[in-house]
Length: 317
Image (cartoon, rainbow, N blue to C red; front, side):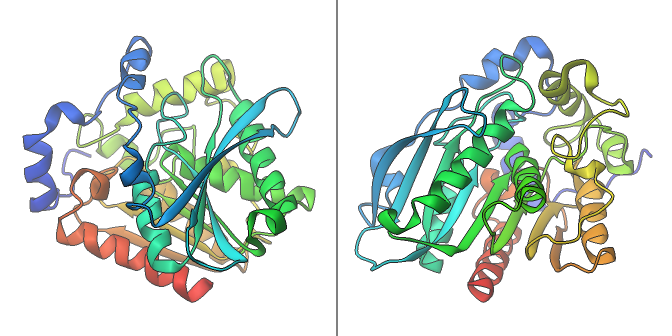
């Protein structure tokens, strides 16, 4: 598959100008360098110049083996109880922090009238599966149980994640479904990393192209799953793309670019939700590479993507 979809011209212009900021390939010995890119934004950007009150909480992981940092950003002047977006950052399960992608999420929350809780889950390879899932699920349970004191509405909780965080959000929703855990109003999966098999047509087609290609994906899944990666033993809570039953999930929003590795696994996930009788809204953004709206926020396609997320979230809540 040598003919690839084109990249949106506005996105491509930024990609060319900031090529050193985009990860296309990633080897295991480059994980440490990738982690150095995670720099906390200033307090003004985090809080929307004071529109959000910020607090930090230490909460138990699902298995009780560690404490998890949760960064809570709540509209400063809004009366509660407020809907909540539980945010899981990107970084291929090997990088990123509680601060990653939060500025974009706060921008969405400000328009939708929501609070945001960002979760500092443990990273691979030091803490492989199921550590990140235990942390995200533990944070979700704690937030639901403490909603009243935090001024949150436990009936309007949306789990949201970007890239690896999108896959982790999907896994957390599956675990909540199967354990009878906190009820979710929805899940928002942005460029989600769902399937460790890494063999979809788009994964092959986009090798060496755009952002986060098949080699980077293999490095990330290898760190997270170790020797399990690609085997028949991988559980659905590690790689939600392995699931055969996606019934009983909350309304789902999925978006992905047409020129990225995760395109076909995201499409397949939405298709299986529909096949199982569920509700999903899918967007495949033409010319979008992985993370295009973070890279080129001013591009028309990026503005359209953010507006679609806001429309879905507003309707849902």
